[in-house]
Image 1 (cartoon, one colour):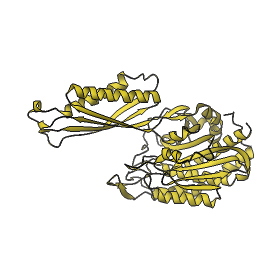
Image 2 (tube, rainbow, N blue to C red):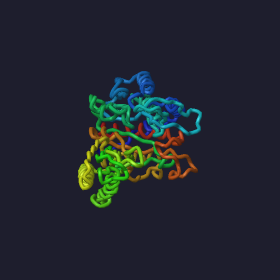
Image 3 (cartoon, one colour):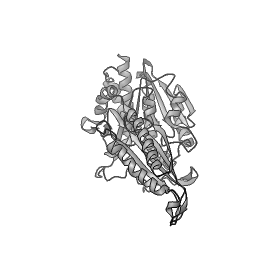
Image 4 (cartoon, rainbow, N blue to C red):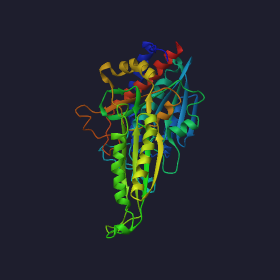
Amino acid sequence: MPEPIIAPSSLVAAIDAAAESVQAQVIAWRRDIHEHPELGNREFRTSALVTAHLRKLGFDEVRTEVAHTGVVGLLRGALPGPVVALRADMDALPVTEEVDVAFASKVRTQWNGEEVGVMHACGHDTHTAILMGVAQVLAGQRARLHGSVKFIFQPAEEMPPEGEDGGAKMMVEQGAMDNPRPKAVFGLHVTSRLPLGVIGYRPGPAMASSDSLKITVQGRQTHGAMPWYGVDPIVTAAQVVLGLQTVVSRQVDLTREPAVVTIGSIKGGVRGNIIPDSVQMEGTIRTFDEGMRDDIHERVTYLAEAISRGSRAGCKVCINKHYPVTVNDPALTEAMLPTLRRVAGADHVHFVPKVMGSEDFSFFQRVSPGLFIFLGVVPPGTDPLQAAPNHSPRFYVDERCLVLGVRALANLACDYLQSGSNA
């Protein structure tokens, strides 16, 4: 893309003033959504709130029920120019809230057959409220917009329920990035790893791919006092777990990119004096390079099967790919850095390390060049390294971050549109 021509100072001032004026409403939306969280593919109330807001603003198009509960709105500017997309995710997590705020969630529901508490423990309530605020700000500047802005409110970023499809991949499949197709897509994520007022960025691979791993070791059940009459899948599984540690530490060139292979669950047996028939293990694989990703999958499978075969046990390895690597387009990132520095101040825009967490924003980046940034939420006086992390029941957001999020996304969109109209 061309070097961005920053939007006229009068438009920048108008956007920032409008963001300040909508701040109280954005906080109110955030608290309402936080108090009424909904899990993936079940964001009915949140989706209705978003839809009503976009229609009230007079959006040219508002498409609902995309990937079950997603909403896609199109705001056409009065002046010619390209199309840019902004995305927010709407779903909460099966977490019981422990934060002492007046609007804390008390919601409980069923998730994959279990009764769970529900909480916006990852901050998607803030993402939705911020993008609703951006919609209001940019709708008010429609006469001065060069091109169009596509608003994508996405369900099920934290994965849909078992047996269902959803999330960004399904939104893309159902045309969320088409008619018209954006030239660029922007998104943000609040984080407890950065202090209030700080924006984090990273060009290239920024967040890891995410794949689930399931290994079943099949032995032959026998009395625990006479193991020679059977095949012990517990000992074999232990050897497999230890062997898997060598995939990353000894078989992968970590000077290229980091990687993680983790076994987080082992289940097998019912009594101490019975060697069971089988053991099931579940885990996750994280990488920052698609070639390394496939290579690690092959090595994990070969190693688990070979170790099991050496113990006369059977082995079934199942690896499911979930989210690709989140890759920020380097040219787009560099081009938009002046915007971020203007919005937050140069001293408050930080180059950040890679994140082993994953994001299905990566599916939108496969359609159009994308930039995904991080917004600090830790209040002054608290060390981010000591703050409760995202996904914790004690995850806390300093709501003063919200107006910065509105300003960041609104200015990214306007500056990009301005650059395209002058290309």
